[in-house]
Length: 356
Ligand code: OGA
Ligand code: NI
Image: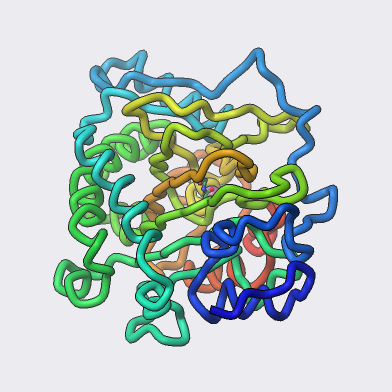
């Protein structure tokens, strides 16, 4: 194994990206200081003086989701925070624990095995192992590795998803289906759409992507980011995080941030750009940011619930029928996603692509 020098950006890129060691492999070299490639400009780091501690995102008990009071809390959270946590959500806790273990299992594989899932070596475009966010585009790297899997079918999954985690991911996808439907069913009531059916289900939840995120121990966490500030391009994201913490969410229309504390057995839900667009801005896709950690490795597993790539999305007809002026154009969802993957993380700027 050729070990790179700390400030040799090219050598570090080869080690991390091309040789399959990832940021995790770099972390395990135990450099005393952060390699230059990862030193983020000050404005890209989270300013800890902007973090407020007296408020936090809502925590909603889903056991009685049909209770109008609970439905109201869900819709209010999506409007006012864009982020909330759910407990008693119906996804068995054993399934969540298995997914976290499977994620750790995948990242513990030797570099040579992980390398098979790099884009350049992979036999499918639906599974890819990545370091940073977009290593070909990022000028400064993020302190993170991730495996991203687009779900097509169970057969495709058996053929291409890594065997150490595929059954657990598939089980998590299946077990979260009912929760996803419940959340969407509730959220659309406020958009004057009475039910989830074949006319709206395809573009509200027509496809899924599941990511395994790994944030290894970092020598100078204050100089870099785990994930830079961004909003998701999904309809909804269902995020499973471990007990480490480190996810921060911007408070709506403010310069303040709140931490999303890990709550055992909870799932974090956030609205993505696609639902902000479809709801014509009523539901908010909120900026979020993950800091790096100097003491612990962290895993998280988001399921991105998306329209189908071939869907054209825009403000829903029922919303416009109420007399609202459309704030967004109609865009092909795959074009929207391509736009997201063309540039480094930069707050909420992706949605400008769809603004009227
Ligand atoms: C993401 C993301 C948050 C986390 O993958 O889009 O925002 O806590 N992850 O890992
Ligand atoms: Ni995100």
